[in-house]
Image (cartoon, rainbow, N blue to C red; front, side):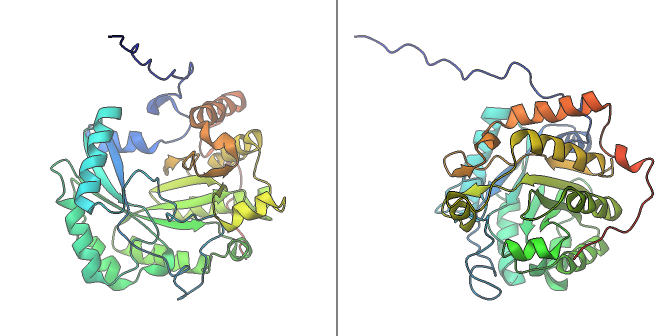
Length: 335
């Protein structure tokens, strides 16, 4: 009986990104390893939330870039319980990356959009799902937290654990937020940021480069605003169109064009040069799910983009925060 030849392993890129200690910016993975002494990975979750920008309480249709999964990684099955999602994802991450400890990441949609008693049940289940879980990461909209919810989240803070609220700020410019149907403002973010900081909870702020109508100066103003605020982390995305989104329809009609790869590489390098070097960089390119990504398709070349950013830093002989050293600090403008 004939047998099939063994499947070859996928070819790895010839030039891998630099290790954490060598990078010209502060990688999130390095911060986690220094704190916990091992390799830590997030496991993404879909806890069945929706969003006030979808259910009509603030808007309908969601942000123009947000897909039907709520910007999830699609690495989970919503029909599974949280415990099942965590256990399956831990098995996958351990086998693929050799990870040692794990942080359940409430990712899909708005993960504080429920009464505190429901949130407590979900967060408790996630923390108890596996012995190697060391904390929580909670992604949400700034306009969906309040004193009671943040008081609850603060109870999960441990000296030897991990706790972070990830806010989708996207930009400091209200005109841009309105163009993507965000239905919230920079003032909403600042309010949530201060409430969260007052409770000693770490924060990661999501930003999007290439927002409609934004100039280079607009995006650098966002970087400088974050440098002044000094959140513990920042996650940088390129505006992209996912299938079945309003942005994808604009792209298909020729009414929106994404950034080219070379332009994004230069832009994200500029952004990092204007960002305080003590801020951990969770991500500098979001790759979306390749089957659902409409544009730009170069986002699937994650390692290539990382290498090009590092090469740009090397050519410039700069690193994270370089642009802040010799220039006066002014309050950044916003709309």
